[in-house]
Image 1 (spheres, rainbow, N blue to C red):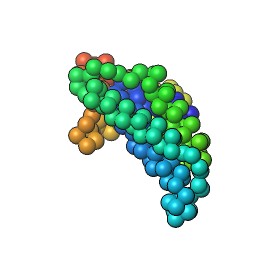
Image 2: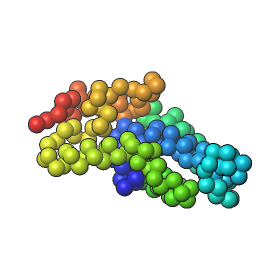
Image 3: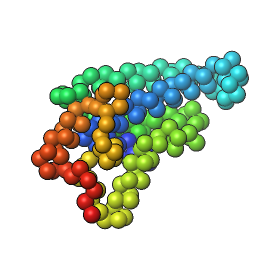
Length: 170
């Protein structure tokens, strides 16, 4: 479910990279704290020995995702695609299981969950809301923190060309 949510969230604009970076940083924090007996005891978190490698792997993946941002800005030179977004979702799910934080998945992956629910509702209602457009474009497509990525520029061009509607199609 997390992999599918990441894949749907990614779409054409690379939105999965930013959300995955935040989720992975949170999981890296939990991996570090869970592997340190002093912090785990102080914060009342279950101590899991030998999670140092998990922390390093997670931080390396965060670095890779942030490096992806550099080449995904307008004009995009690299696109994540299904392989990258499915991998990010799978890694997030596996890390949550390894760190025994499975119940945090709905909280951490809330954007993925909302995107999945949006697709399910669109299919059930048999209405095309926006053809190949991300959910966040329904809310005006505002960039967060000044970064929108190349997909936002492509989306604006698709709206101008009439390929993608700005408003829901009933």
